[in-house]
Length: 371
Image 1 (cartoon, rainbow, N blue to C red):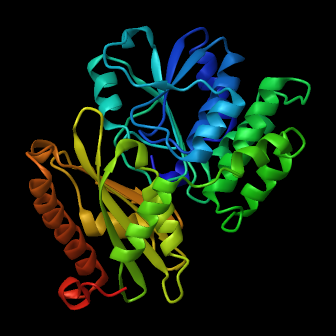
Image 2 (spheres, rainbow, N blue to C red):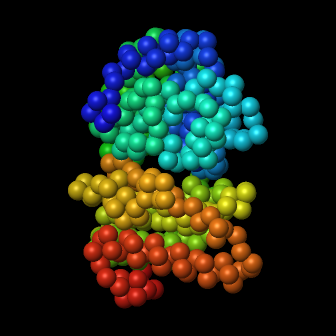
């Protein structure tokens, strides 16, 4: 099914009715953002009408200050993926704001445990990684939170400001819409409509607290590193930021957002090697663009290609994209010198693939050290 054949909003109620009384797991991307978290929360609210209990699960880290504030201030329960848990208790899996390609370990474990994919709701390009019972993909929506707001407006839940869980959901969804549309700057008509609908139920003071989180010293250091390492060519600002801890992963998109604001830059691509608690490493990157003729999804897929299983390393939406390339066997090392050599190789390979896509030869050599 392609995105133009997405089923209407009322269909999700029919699907949930058919699975009344079950336990489901809501799978977020490994590094969930406000759009994913708020959409998962809204799904829990809707599923509760059908006596369906849902756990929200993610496989990586929640590290961005605003994301941490969102979860803590609103009391949202999000569980870290644990392969030792009993996954057979779930009768189905629901994917919001992702299609499994950014939660690969969780997807693989669910498949081995025999847990079927029931629902996928997303606003990114169709990935075809999963075969759900119900799929609703809207690329013309600025956020998945907008889709879930439409469900709430037309569906079985009548929001009421006297119910705290409704206020929490409305506040979280508003934050999800705003973050994924750059403060509504890139919002579509449907996003404005959703934000307007939620305005009657959200908690403005909580929303302001969530959105007023300051950047840490570590975040500023990494942004400074990206600023110093950037190469600017043909309106693209490309920067590698080296090795990062898993808890610093969210600084990569923040750095991209900072670099794209520079004069004569229309697209920023920032990447680094993220090392997880299990010592597994991956090249993680983020793209931000203000050039309306550049399709982040197409650009990343063309530049970086697919893995051995035929899945793309990344993709995107209207003004943003991301990618994750597992290093696998080459993870870890024997000391600082080896890590430095590895980074030089990874950095050069990513740059050359990006330069090839842009259509520039030997840009790395010609522009090395230029800022």
